[in-house]
Each structure stands twice: as structure tokens, then as C-alpha cells.
Length: 449
Image 1 (spheres, rainbow, N blue to C red):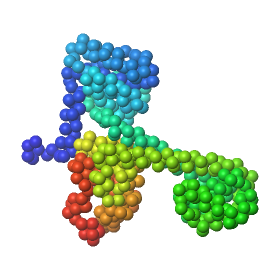
Image 2: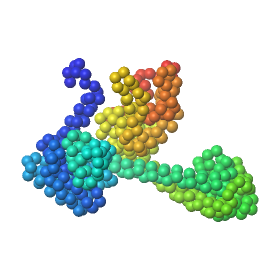
Image 3: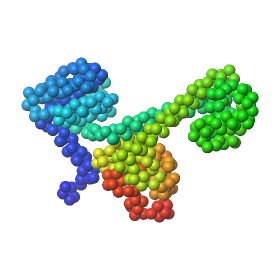
Image 4: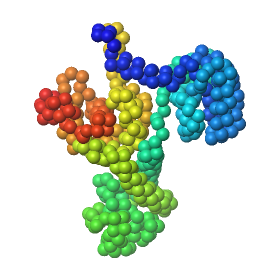
């Protein structure tokens, strides 16, 4: 590009992206817009002006759409096109099936974001109509306008990591829900039990003691109390050993035994509620065992990809934390820049300015919510252990102008972690604190802040 053209880095990145898309959505190709469903597939063939050349409904599953693609290719050839480009919305896993069928026939394949098609549907004729016939044409029209994207390449190892990451997220959500239900039930029928440990649901001793109360005695606190403190402690000790611990915290065990006599509760609901707590404890134990297995498999996949040493070089970021992030990003090399990855997570700042007016900057909040959550979870350990991130947090929350709140600063660090993770993987070099601070040491950064 000529000097002084005014072309920004963002312009160059956008131009490169449009060039890649145009190579797939060639003007010599007709566009096959497909609205995917379970057993009904609407297929339209259009030119680049969205003129419908052919339309047909196929009553079949996604795996049987090869016949539809062959039919659409013949229609495009009859209309004078040299090839076709296949486009659809990424609904469920059906789009993966369609992508495979298109690849088998050497047909370019692109996707249209559901959010983009939803917005365009509203602007189409202001009727908010949604039909398979209209959606298929709309998908083709957005593709012709290059308002589409190139889907992530299919890779067995990265695909496995993504599925494991999804399973891990489901287990964490389930365990969190189980803890909240147990807390709510105990607040009703035995509130004193919750005060016997600072973080009861993270205490192996507390969980073991609650298990003894709910499993052995069926939630009958009087029966448990008749055991006596010594026998109760021995039962708790055996349960702690079963859970993989070495020895219990006698302070917590004795406090819970003392709480057996606390009168504050809705006694009429106690037996049934504690029975539900027993079931929830079993569910939580099962989910915890499954979670440990999934996390072990995830770190194994990262090692299989040869990325363990690279991600482990980022001080404060565990291999598991990096695996959770990579499960949502896929291969980071598919992103043209680190900023594109941050945008994918919805952690990029949203600029709001017009003329002399400058509005308040906020995060976009778009992209993949689970990626944003994985990066957010990684902040807590990294901020404490990594001097670069700690210095950045102090600077962002302590500077005189444009001071950020703690939450805003942590979001900025989450974005930084994504950028650094992208850098070490795409370059193949370990994390360097000097490069991360642009040559400014963490100590100097704190002083400057």
C-alpha cells in the first residue's frame, strides 16, 4: 500500500479477510443457501444479486444432503456458473455434516452467523417473518454480500478438546447448582451447619461430616447425637479417608457435632430436606469424579498438541486453565491477530465517539460467552502469581486519569491473557516478561503507576 494512503492496520486486516472470503464466494460461483432442520431442508440456488435460480425442499436428514448439493450444482451449471458456494447457519451440529458433504465435492463452504441473519430478517420487510423459504434466500443474500465467515477447520485433536471443554463446563454448572440447592435446603432445616466452616462446600471434613449425618442416620440429628462425639469423629475420619483425605479437621467435625443441638430450623421439613441433601451429595461426588477425569483428559490433549511447555511458560496460567481457553478458541493460529481472538471472546473495548463527542467505553460482550468465562476464571490465579499482570492491575486501578474499577481491570487482564496465549502458540516461543511489558520491568511498571 502506498505511503500516506491513510490505510490503518484495521483496514488491512479487514481487506485481507474480505480477500479470503471472496476466494470462496467467487463471482463465478452460484450460491447455495440452505436452511437446515431435522428432516426438512430448504435449498435455494441464487446468483450474486440474490435472484433465485432454483428452489427445492428435501425431506431428509442432514447426512443425506449430498443429493441436494448435486442437484444444486446441476442447476448452477445450467445457469452458466462454473461452480457453487455452499452457505448455511451454524445450527446444532448439522452444519458440520453439511461442511463435510461440501468438502467431499470440493465445494467452498461458509457460514452466516445466526445473529446477523436475525438482524437482517428484521430489516428485510419489517414483518419479522421467519420461514424456511425466506431464511434460505436470506442466507444466500448475506453470503453474496460477504457477511459470512470461514468456519473453523475440522481437526480430530482440536475437536476432541472442544467437546471435552463443553463437558467440563456442563459439570461445573451442575456442581454449582448442586451446591446452591444444598445451601438453600440447609438454610431452611439446619442453618447452624453452614456456620461450622468458613467455606463449607470446599471443606473435605465438612462434606464428610454432612455425609455421615445424611447417609448413616438419614438426617435424624437426634440419632447422630446419640453416637457421641468420639464415634462421630471416627465415622468422619473414615469418610474423609474414602474421599482421598489424610485426616479430618477436628475443629470442623466437633463444631458440626455441636450444631446438632441447634434448635433453629423448620423441623417439619428437616427429614425430607436432608434426604434431598443426601441425593445431592451423591450427585456432587459423581460429578466431581467425572470432572477430574475430564480435566485430566484435557491436559493430555494439550500435551498431545505439543503446547504444554508453551502455555505453562505463562506464569500463573495453569495448563488446565489454558486448555479450557483453547477448548473454546480452537487452534489460535486461525485468527489473523491476537486482537481478533480478543474480539471473539467479547473482551474488546467498544468505541463510542462521534465528532467531538466521546462516550463511555464498554466491552462488546459479543462472541463466545464460554471463552469469555474461561479467560475470566484464569485471571484469579494469574493475577496473584504473575508480577506482570499484578503490575498491570495496580496501574489500571491506581492511575490518576481514566482509572478502572477492579472488575474492569480484571477484564483487561483476561484480554491480555488471550493475547499472550495467542502469541506464544503462533510464534512457538515461551512467554517472556520483558516482551510482555514492552521492555518495562514489572517493578518499574508498579512505580510508574
